[in-house]
Image (cartoon, rainbow, N blue to C red; front, side, top):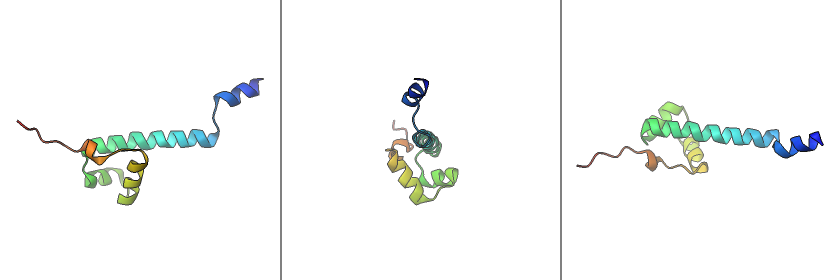
Length: 75
């Protein structure tokens, strides 16, 4: 019974690792996009990632550079 309960409440190592990596990727890229204010060059410099890999990751996570671009104050 104890083994059965443990299996029901804990996912596999592979699934747990995938979930942790996705959470890390999301958090890291959100911070990078926020710091760079949507500037691709700044985001690439901060992250050290190649452009293609960066775009692939933000697309996989459903993020958009436009959501982080600096919007000038309009008065």
